Amino acid sequence: MPAAIPTKPGSATLPFFGVLPKLVNIDGKTLEGPGEGNLCFSQPWPGIMRSIWCDHERFVTNYFSTYPGNYFTGDGARRDDDGYYWITGRVDDLMNLYNPNVVEAAVVSAPHPIKGHFPYAFVVLSNDKRLTDELIKEIKSVVRDKIGAIAIPDIIQQANGLPKTRSGKITRRILRKIAEGDKQADLGDISTLVDESIIEHLWENRSKEVRTTG
Image (cartoon, rainbow, N blue to C red):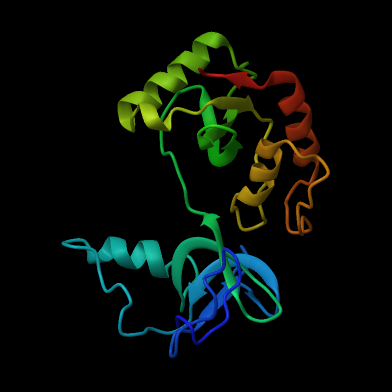
């Protein structure tokens, strides 16, 4: 509430009366105390979104199926010792595109000195394919046709695999740190990954094979 609750720079401050936010990790476990995770709400409040026009099934799938029993906003958030929240960004950003040579892909936001942020893509290719200039043009063309020029990744990096938990979810916070290029950054808990060695491969590929699409 303005003037009633002390503010902190960049913070959404404290929850309003009757609004019960919670942070959960990628496996759905509720996080207690200060920390960072996915922002959910454990019960409704008068202003909560109720449906999507003419597509209630999509509403249920998008907001209630990821963490059953919770309303998942699609945002990441950080909470401090005083219970203040900071929104850290979207965690469900996807580009669902098809290319016969791309087995799997993930796109994250990376900082840019002029544009603020830009799309940074990690692609896993099939049958020992390499990320050639021709394939980059194909991927860029698909993105332009299906989404628009604004979504074309500035950087496309070939990956041997993507960091996933045992439940099959991509750990995007790791990809964001790699995209930012800070090898000393804290990647958080990686004990839930199926294959931790993928992280080192991603760093190696970043330094050797990063290609711009500009």
